[in-house]
Image (cartoon, rainbow, N blue to C red; front, side):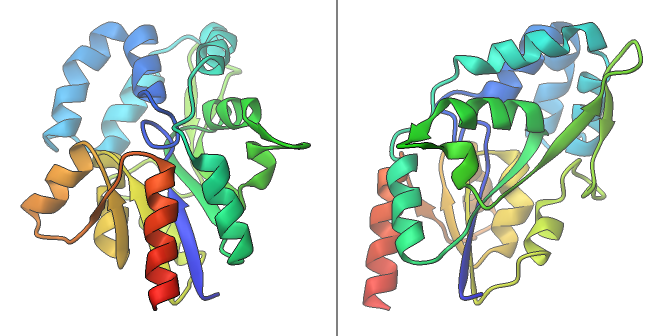
Length: 218
C-alpha cells in the first residue's frame, strides 16, 4: 500500500470532545480526579480510562449511545473521504474511546446512499462488556500505556506513507511514529515540546487541501 490515513475520533472527527464529555457526564467525580493526570501524563491512558469506564453501571450503556447521537462531525469529512477515494487511500479510524460511540456518530452522517460509517476502511476502538453490574473494558490492541495502542494498529497497515490526524494525548504515540502528522489543540503542544514536525489544521477541508498539494507536488 502506498498511503494510509489514520484518524482519531474524539475531538478530531467530532467537533466536540464526545468520549471525554461522556466520561465527565457518567463518571463526574472520577473524571475530575483522573483527567488532569492523563493530560499531564502522570497516569497512563490504559489505567485512567479503564478506571473511569469500569466505574459506570452497565445499565447506563443505552444512555451512552444516546449521548453520542447528537454530537456534530467536524466539517469537511465527507469531502476528505471523496478525495481519498480518488487516490485509493484508505481512511482508518483509531480511537481510544468506545466503539459504540464512534459507530453511532458516523452512522448519523451520510453521503448519498452510504453512511460515513460504511465509508471508513476500518475502526479500531475500545469495546465493553455489559453483562455485569459495571462496564468491563475489552481491547484487542491494548498496549503498555494505551487501551488501544495506535502504533500497534498502524503496524497492521504498513504503507510507504502513513498519515496521522489527531488532537490530544491519545494521539501522541501515533503522531511520533507517523511521518506525516496533522495536529491541533493539545496534540500540537505535545509535539512542539518534543520537536516533532506537524501540519496544523482546523477542519477536514484543511487536511484535504494540504494532502492534495503534497501529493500533487510530490
